Image 1 (cartoon, rainbow, N blue to C red):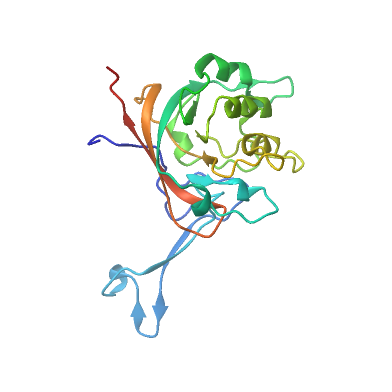
Image 2: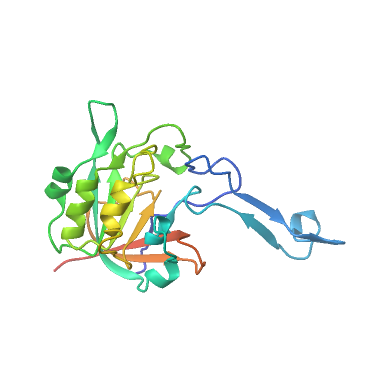
Amino acid sequence: MSKPIDLSIPLREGAENPNCFWAPMPEFAPVRAGDFVGSTQEGGVVNFFNVRLNPHGNGTHTECVGHIASERFVLRECLLESHFLAKIVSLYPRRTEEGDRVIFQDQLEDVFSNSEADALIIRTLPNDDWKLRQHYSGTNPPYVHPEALEYLVKCGVQHLLLDLPSVDREEDGGQLLAHRAFWQYPSATRINATITEMIFVPNEVRDGLYLLNLQTTSLDLDASPSKPVVFELILV
């Protein structure tokens, strides 16, 4: 427990952040009121900043079924626990005839089995630090095939974490088939299941089983900036 491995990407002001779906960049600005300025660098007595961000578009975030549902679901009411047995796996998205890069069911079958863990953490390959600042909008980044998500549901995975901006294709005509498959929406909605996107798993972190601590803020929204932290398990 004294050696946490942080899988979140620090959220900075400006363009040095991973960004997707044409979301505006994060903005940090000191509060100004009369003679008061909330910046010690500008002569204020305290730092007192407003923050403008989009949870889905700016950096590491966790989302619940409220992301796609017509009903109102908020993350803080869906994610009721914080600690999970998790498995980290590394996969190369496979290129299709159309040129898309996709993670398929047979790839997950090779690395994950039924009831192996509550959470699955996917590190896509190649794994470079450009993921810490990649602007994905308009690039058709890799995604996950809906049948692969159906497989994870059958395996009992409640929480999926990956270093991509979305489990679905960037432009899919609004179908969101992978999101729907994972949350089983609307037929058998898995209210307590979550998807965490735009994480970063350092290369020195080995594939295998970990204890996951999934930290989020208590916003009344379908998603929140998040801080997934894992701890290596020593199996005896």
